[in-house]
Length: 355
Length: 272
Image (tube, each protein chain N blue to C red):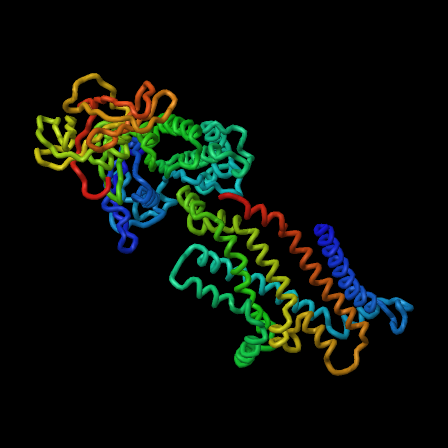
């Protein structure tokens, strides 16, 4: 059991900065997810931790001891790869035993441990098969068993679920969470999927262009995004560029033309500041209130049946479009009055460039 | 109608090819066993004494020894040198890799005679020409690129993440080579080895230019037997040709027992 993994890493490929001073301290038994779009440097971060690539600058400390000079095989980590990376010429059992054989463990001990690992990932009886004979989900479970067999000090997972179909992904997500809790693992998980990050993590670090944009618990990230980028990543679909009219504690009123929205702030804003109001489709509700702040009118332009609810695109008076989720069907062309509850609207500082 | 014609054409071609081959090989085989064979469809009497004669006269034990030594050494050297080279070429991209590869594979494309003579001149100057070592060195010139050429796609299909997984879970660099790369590239190594072996046994030009009295391989000895001054019974030369064919066939069969062509397909088809 480790108590902490602390690192501060910078990686450049030529002139391109892939990772810009990424600093993080992971506590023992913690599940930390690095979340970001493809190309944000998250996989590079994992490869640096594993020792598969060398940082341009920085250090890695495991329980206070520097390990960045050690080759990958001496760091004592386990790693699960996106494409499973199982050895095709070895049986499932030999794949799981791989790290143990290299550590010179006895035959009986290896056999027992392989049996236990396969039991843990629910693949008892598969030891003699070859990876090519398994489904994607089974292969990923073998990869997890192989990583766990060496009793890793830290488990690194590089988008382990992104090659699986939706149903299997959900199933494996539960499996990973169960194993992490049952075995008391310290895990660093890399993904671009916000649902995975929210459901698995104790802490989420959001990375963009090699930089940490925001870090916090899943609830913090989900409810209190600090930037438009994070809000977009966390499922806020509606963004309205506004100007702050007045502030009052952590709520502000912002306007643009006829549109006036009151909402929460996470980052302090002053009157006159350019801002963006963000709201999730499922937080918007129909209303009979008279027009005023946070109440808007519009015409239904598009409806989408989503099973339990209806996705509706509403063209608001004055131009912008609002995407909402409604419990009841509405017809295209009908007029609609909608309320954006102030406690569900987040007012964020405007960003330069694209969100 | 067209399909049937097409099938007939293919059938006739195959029959023609087999008949032609059987005719040529059959003639040499029968002639090597004939006591005398003139104006009759088949020889009057058969004998195996031409084999003994050829073995003695052409010193075939020594020639066979040289042939197998040269072929074995060239194959081993081409694999030992070619595998790391193929690995580096497969794993690293650099400016000018394309032109370099083309330059590298030039000995495979250019007729051997064009560079064989200057190569022989150079090797003779350093007193390697005319020796077994010279024959081996000269054969390596086209065989090393051939080995690399064959190995390259086999190495390329081994995913880097397999190497990474091996490293993270405890393998040293050498351990990765031993436990992951070599086993996965084994079909490629066997294929490359087979092609180099057969090509070296059959190589005429370079061996002809470089070999001296004690360093002839079978195919060169056969050439000298046919064209050297002095009369030799044609039956003995045919006996030698049969021995040559038998050796090549034996090498091929032996190699194919180790390398199953189906296994190559299976490997290439595999996901990593």
